[in-house]
Length: 346
Image (cartoon, rainbow, N blue to C red):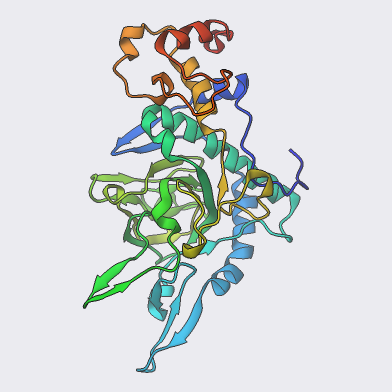
């Protein structure tokens, strides 16, 4: 990987080695569409935490715009136009929203690209658990770093909420509506959540559990874990207060829908993505998942998979199809797979 390359819209090649890696991934289905991939990412904690700490303060200061209301109270708004009191700002995590810019070192650029590649592989594996989601993943965006200090927490919310309100006969329309397009969230955990204070060693933290109140799920993050989950209201979630230490993670979203400048949504072509994780198309998802599906289902009787809803097996023709990319029918899946080399047994 070329560290000087500013091409941020690429996805990893899903070759035979990548297929083997994804097939061997351990997964922990927590329920409700929440999937944990233990140890999916290698983490160099000393270098990563040092970089985040060095960039966190300036990022936090640049995130907020401050105002004074008619009563003389100071408040601030964030990049999404949400309003916070000064006291609330002290309790929210620090977000490094643009981790890659002209000042980012080649080593860190390579690191973030590696993280993006691993998230993408987890995404393909995630799709196999819920195949019908594949048609709702058009582009990705908003990859950024988050640091929680002692006393920080994240209130209960869902990632599909754009903060719309209609009250007192007035509609409060959000200026930006990118949240409405988000379908799947992905998190990488950089350090461990521990059980008690006597386990603290300067690299981990106490508290800060991820929880989903409607699903009855609580997860203690571990270094190298990747968690994917739906952004809808059913997967409403929060992060409990960090009691000691610092909690580090990386978050991004996979979304759907076309560009809509009026609500601040502009999706770039992959080769025209000139900034870190600005919204950009990922045109490879369907084809990459098809590769994985063929390997994962190799050798299974047609009868076993015939009732599983999966776009790969559905006969969905495309307008203008030139015959080079025909939809797969059940028998075609196995005929094609038999010619591909049986990756699982290599």
